Image (cartoon, rainbow, N blue to C red):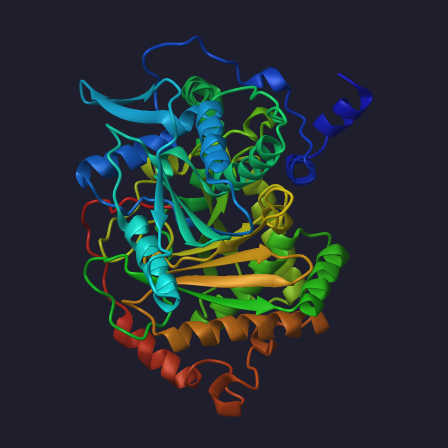
Length: 526
């Protein structure tokens, strides 16, 4: 081991975890390339822990589109060669075995099987026969239909591509996959490879992409063999300390009474925070030696505290779970969900809350290898069909490789933009997703349950989140109770910083609080 390696190993666990996290985000890794070995070819392979949960959910409700990935809709303008694009998808399917994987039930246990390379499942739709004003309407209908069309895990394929022609040089590509073979990071890999392969093929050049060091099934086999014994004991002990006992239920005021059973119907609201505010947030990060996630998450907790006055907050936070260099370019279902429990008691200054978040987050990153599925199995939380177990609210910072700029071009004469499609679902009470758009600023989105919240309530929360960030970047030493979270848009200019004021919050809390019902597990999703 080098002197540097020895010094890193001697760091306290929290500092070592943070260092490795920062190295990952810079595209570096301390893990050796051979840490996940390739396994010999065989007829079938075990599922990863995350895949097992989705397979069992599918067995309980066959044909449900609930675990379809959010639809990728890509608008392409320019002289697109559709045949080259089809061959591009053929090559992506050849490279990534996950895209030709199916799942079988063998004696009551699931296995995954890899089909030989074959043409990608691409469908062409030509809308030029419709009047110009109707094409966009039909495109939206096709996108919604595709997002809601289920997959058959046993028969496949679990990838569908539709090339919609709207005009001579106007196309939209709809890409839908089942979550069991992909995740958000994987979707970005697919888009990046689509552009690189199309560009090379359209210019008569060979495939420019290097071979993949492992396949997803190699990761699944490795995970099943590695996560046992002392490794499992240490991870389990940490999460039991953090989350053991009765976890608090987030008592966020709702506009409607909570249904006895979740229906998972939702909507998406978006707000762009300008570049100036984004730069101030990043300056605060540097000043307090925190990552962008930690600072934005602390602001999110401050907002929840002001709404609920709860001092023990438990939030789900998805992580890419690609902390080994071999996994970074592989399409597959790697994402894991960490459960972060933060103490906000004592009316701390915002900088103190940032330090608390940093400690909790770094500790969690150091123990992120325990799959969420195992965590639920070990903790055995109370089950209630009206809400998710462990946590009811999600927070995520999207930091996929390449950043937002890698979805801006396709070939020499084409431009590509991603269209946002609202799938009409929400697996949580609500989920806050942040994307750093760099030059444009920060995109904040809330995917929320329409059974619980009105659209105007969620829009107000987004405005208040922005107002809170402006307040803490101007004066980070402000105590949580004193942070200004109103704006000129809120409450018709009234100074109240919460919907209807604190009295209204108390009344709504009283009307929406109900005793939990012990029932079967709903199947938590990240």
